[in-house]
Structure formats: structure tokens, C-alpha cells
Length: 322
Ligand SMILES: [Zn+2]
Image 1: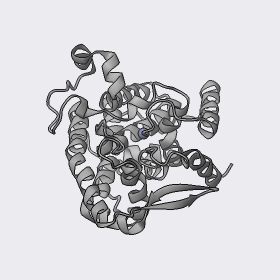
Image 2: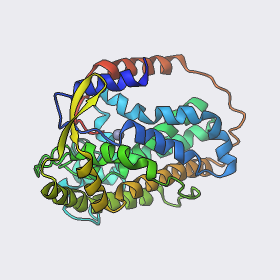
Image 3: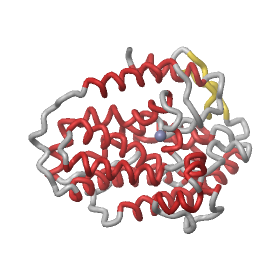
């Protein structure tokens, strides 16, 4: 099935639910993982380069899993304002164990765990590099890129994730997909070299705090843009379906008000993704990965095929936020 048909099927499901929130779109996630490979220093770039297609295409696997597993959804966000009203984030424990002690695991799972889950994947990637397990290195690298990108999205830090509490329904996909797809060709994805992160945990929370701090502007400027363009919605044709979207004048005005925010968050994502991969490799003892052979694991491949089939014909389980 070609990509156009796949997108057609997805939007077919969305067309009757115009307020469904869609995360960094598939296009963005793929481009961010792709660009991150080019931030790597030569010794690691030569490992990732032959797998560029895999790293790019599998950037969206984490979102596809949301159609198969109910516990996947909470890994993509953290409703910070359930715990704190304003940045900086200074009362939520950085460590998972301390957070569980303070809030209980059930509460954390209910309101999202992206910051902690990203740290967990980072450790798993480091272990996979120590063990030189090619399949896991690639799978976890692609997933790590996905969650690191989601970390940079302001609307992934709030219970008001789709503007549903402030009469701004649809803002999630507006910020993450519509604006990105309209203007990404003007974005500069050359972010400089990936760097070693002495404290992965601190960096992750720092980036997420920036997302939470930007939330006010994301919501406020949408209100301003709506005052100027009250007829902001249009019906867009997607594949064989019609979906509710935003007109270009409204988008252009909102994008201008945001003053480069979407591009800045995309660029920060790219650099963090590369830096996390690089840090995992350094922490693993800088193993020589160039001699690893492709050994497809049949069970994993069967699982992936099953998830793909659910993705094509099912509904998202849990919150409709990617
Ligand atoms: Zn996601």
C-alpha cells in the first residue's frame, strides 16, 4: 500500500472527529530523526548512515503502537499542570522512583510519563550498544528520537492538550502538523554537532521545562490570531476524505506571532536526538559497531507487522494525542 493510501485511511478515521489531536506529524518525526543522523561525529555517523532509511521510517513506530497497546499513550506526554501551574518545573522529582513515592505509579501513568520513559529508553539503548545488538540499537534509536521530539512540544505538557479547556479545539494538530507542514521547507535543520550529555536526566527536564514555559504563548497567540481571523477553519481534502483544518492566512499570522517557535523546537529536537544517541554510545564504552550484521528477529518482525495492521484499521487506544 502506498503512503498516500495509508494517509487517506488515517484521515478517513479523523474526518468525523475534527478535534482529534495528532502529534508532531509523521512527516516531522521522520525528518527530525533523519536530520539527527547528520549531527553525529564521524565515528558514529558511519554506523548510522547505512541505516538512515530505517531510522527515518521507524520514527513513527511509537505512534503506531498506540493502536495496539493501551499503555503506549502515556509515554508521549506529561500533563505538568496537573502538578504545577507555572514553569520552572521544580516540584516533580526527576527520578522515577522518587516520583512514584510522591505521586503513586497509577497517577503518573494517568497524567503521562514522557520524561521518565525517555530516560528509560536511553538506558536500554546504552545496554544494547554494550551488547552490540544491532536490531535493538536501531529500534531503540528510532523510538528515542520519537519521544525526544515529543518532549519539545508545548502541548505535550498540559491537560489542555488540544485547547479543549479554553475553546481552542484543534490547536494540537495546528501547532505540530499544520504549521510544520506549511513552513518546514524554510526551516534550517543544521543544528551543529551532537554533544555528550553529562546528565541525561537534567537535560531532558530542562528541555521539557522549556516546552512547558512556551505553553502560555502557544495558547495566547492562537487567541490573538483567532480574533484577527475568526473564520479560521476550512475543509481540506485528504486522500478520499474531507477534514476540518485551518486556512493559510490564519496559519501564516499565527506562525508569525510564534516568532520561529516551531522551528526552534524542531531544531532543539534534532540536536537532542543526536546527542542522546552519541551519549549512549560513549556511555557504552564507544564500541565498534561497524562490523554488526543484519539478523532480522522473526518474532519482532511479526509483531511489527501486527502493529502495522492495527494501525491501518483501528482506533487509537487512550488519549488521542501523539
Ligand atoms: Zn508521539
